[in-house]
Image (cartoon, rainbow, N blue to C red; front, side):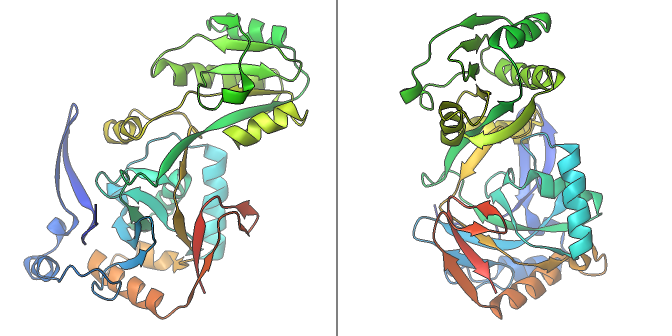
Length: 329
């Protein structure tokens, strides 16, 4: 599917699982809305003054500003992480990277904590990178938990049972664990506990399991499926919690219904993403400009800057990106 500008839809009504949408320009006055409707929908980044298009070989990346209230989270956030980001953005005075958003639903795919931090800074609009979520090049993984600290499988089992979680011991096949994973706790000593859960119940159980780990004074961290298993097998962590796979429809549903998943469940692997758009916070909080005016200024500025394409696996500011990146100078 080729994305045609403008991308975003304004959520007007929510009733059960039925939703009504209008184009994002429905809030503009008639002259502004007419200008948007009559804009040519060309395929190059120069054709539309209100978004910046990067045509990657696998998918289009459309950069623009979106109204804050249109963006829908699909996961809970970690308050400490939100506070850290908010303070960092306030200190820098700019938002470096755009939030990755599903074009059809406005569900945030990557950048949940940034959205909440920017809302706390009273931002009316936010920089986004809009993608076709149904594009098969976008993959969905999950974040496993690594548990570090002195703990036995028996201690963890007792903590889970006392919290009402049924468990059973089992012998997982580590070679196919990421393909057939369920909610389970695997220990460096070789013992494994299967946590009884089904459907969305798995995420309620995950939150309880994390709470039990912290009550046992374990350090909980988040790793990709492969990295977590590698650390366990190499003795670099004492235990891991594996998660069941999740599909795109479930993620969209979580965002559209407001029934949020726990923090750090989904991990989106996107073929490429833009970085370092560096938009001033003052632009995002300015009440004197319309969304269209702010977008035109933002996009015009991006077009004056150079851009470097980096390969997958590049480490940028301490983070390793699994995807290619486009970095604005």
